[in-house]
Amino acid sequence: MKYATDFENIIKTSSTTLSMSISHEFGLGAVSGGARIWMDDGSSETNSPTPHSGSRCVGMETTTSERNEFNIYSIQNLVSPSTEYYVSEWLYLPVGWTIPSSHWYSICADLQALADPYLPRSEIILNNWDNINKIDLGTVANGVVDTYYSLPPIGQWFKFAYYVKLSTTAGIIKVWINNEEILSASGIDTWGAVGRAMLTTVAKIYGGEGKGTLRLWVDDLSIYSGAP
Image 1 (cartoon, rainbow, N blue to C red):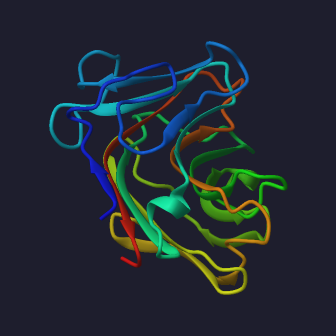
Image 2 (cartoon, rainbow, N blue to C red):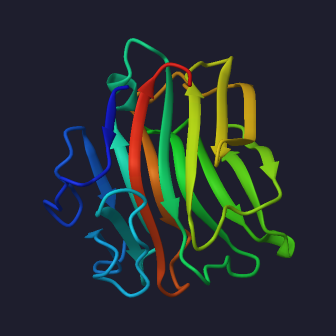
């Protein structure tokens, strides 16, 4: 294990950072004031869930912004010398949450390069194209590489985990919800020749601009070097 927190002793240190010992930041989108984060004890916000464990978790919200993303920077350095990593966390989508018709919504970007051309990138996308709710494992470099026709649980905590093997030709990405493998892709470029300053986005609200208030909660984050 390279890092773990249940957020019990974590405090908010700025509008975009927490008192975590690893490099991170919340990207709050292009609209000033349209997104925020907070430490949630289950009672301070309307419809806040009881934290998955202990008494604190992280709340994330967008109102007029298109995104709010919980980024862990330099993931390749955190897990070095391994070129494999595994992330486990608990997420909560509130009661009544839905994907707007013919729209999409991202909850995680398990791999992204920081340098131009911002490749490769893998993203867990919940979408409602053609009025069919589904989860896509989509990548800019490779297109949509796998699809699972179901949404994660709504109104309850669910365990979300993913595994990434970094390789230009033999890359692997796998995703689990509540220990069920739902998506898997192999033989893909998960590294690329450019931009090896990688980040992993462990929780994300993206595609929210103009869609009203959208929320997501995070608890019990663990990052491992190597395969699960």
